[in-house]
Image (cartoon, rainbow, N blue to C red; front, side, top):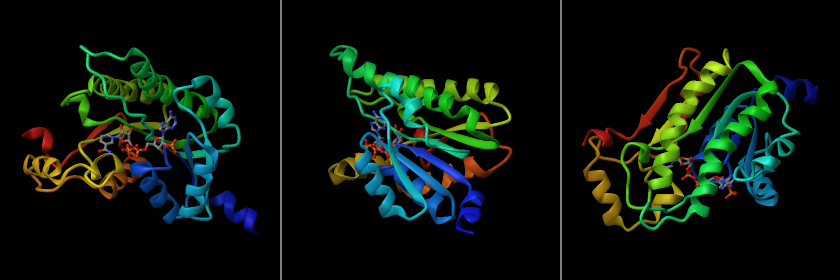
Length: 239
Ligand SMILES: NC(=O)c1ccc[n+]([C@@H]2O[C@H](COP(=O)([O-])OP(=O)(O)OC[C@H]3O[C@@H](n4cnc5c(N)ncnc54)[C@H](OP(=O)(O)O)[C@@H]3O)[C@@H](O)[C@H]2O)c1
């Protein structure tokens, strides 16, 4: 009986689901009854986070910056209805003070690693499956040290277009958040930094991880949305 019930659960995988926005997405998917796999770089941490989220969640480890190991790491994943790839290993880099090794890790992670995950799981994607990739609005608005981040997030926009064509009828979309104020990457910033960002945001608040997870579920669920790069910034790019 338990087996029959689990076969009927929708299956989701959140790559980079052990922290930040990916974790909140995993929590929302689990809360609505999906069976969820969350991944991080470390198996114990991924298992611990999965256990914290709930009984329908399990963890596994893979390193997107080491693409040769990705397919084997995903061996135990069965059918996939929803695939969310949110992982990031941040890189501060400017062209005048360029660290090619660090740049190479992030470029590999977001461009080759994201694609290799999709490649490895492609035979297991349900025909009505949906994929959401994470870019970010550094693609439009660089900040000091964002050269690699700006470049790879811009490339995610293009990746969506080619994958949506190659994988049809599977849908592929991307979300590009601006500054997500309550995410671990930003919440520890001095209040003045966050206040300056709020002042520049027409809605008068920064996007939250909950806002982003809400939009990810929309992109996963809406059967007509495909090949879309969705900016989520409260109008910040307009100012
Ligand atoms: N936070 C923002 O304001 C913001 C703004 C714009 C765009 N974004 C985008 O939103 C996504 C999520 O950002 P976040 O701030 O929520 O991230 P985060 O809290 O830093 O979490 C990063 C996740 O990626 C995993 N990860 C790191 N390096 C990895 C690697 N080499 N291979 C596989 N997994 C790896 C981490 O797992 P472990 O640590 O467990 O290994 C963790 O689950 C990112 O793609 C980011 O570019 C975020």
